[in-house]
Length: 288
Ligand code: BEZ
Ligand code: FE
Image (cartoon, rainbow, N blue to C red; front, side):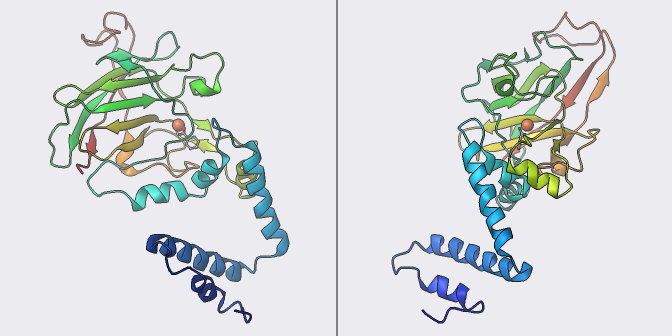
């Protein structure tokens, strides 16, 4: 086609697909081109703006490593990661939420009632709940891969002073689908701002903070994997998470408990003198 115009370029683009193109590829790429073309026309994108966008991508590529993926972060702050989560969610199941870059593979198995706090400062937090299916049946033996920040706001992979497995553990739910562990409260933190994503946030007048959260990946035979996070209701950033990860059903509360009431059956039983807090949070998994 030699008479390409702003009005027909999208149609011309789709006309260039080969006859054997995978139909889903055609659908996704066709829609992507349609929206990109419409966006370009809507804002009257200038050459300088187009080049700035490409430069941001180049910079992202330069600083992306296996440990730090600036493209994923860009997708996160643009709301794309969360939107993919939401369009693939199932009503009734616990919402999924962003994985983030700080998950460590092969977390050490931890027993029911285990402690993640170790020697770190802070009030003891007991987190417990049940993993069930959408009909309310418990899912015995569900695996919960758990991770969070240390009280200094850093994940183990960001902090040379922490063991790489600190605040990471893999728990197997009991025959009633129950899980329980002790830890300290995770804290809010900022996403990395020393790359193009930081510049985008800055130009948009946005802060880089995430509300504090506990991460979970929950797997069980015959169920859809759940990647999620749970957030305390009193976090100052709950309604302004820079990666849009908060959902109403992922909000929990810290329930303060008086000194001298810490229960039996935990690694820390007999070792908690002061006040402590409790979180009860149940997960609902979709059976496949
Ligand atoms: C996180 O929750 O660990 C995270 C998610 C998205 C971007 C950065 C961090
Ligand atoms: Fe996180």
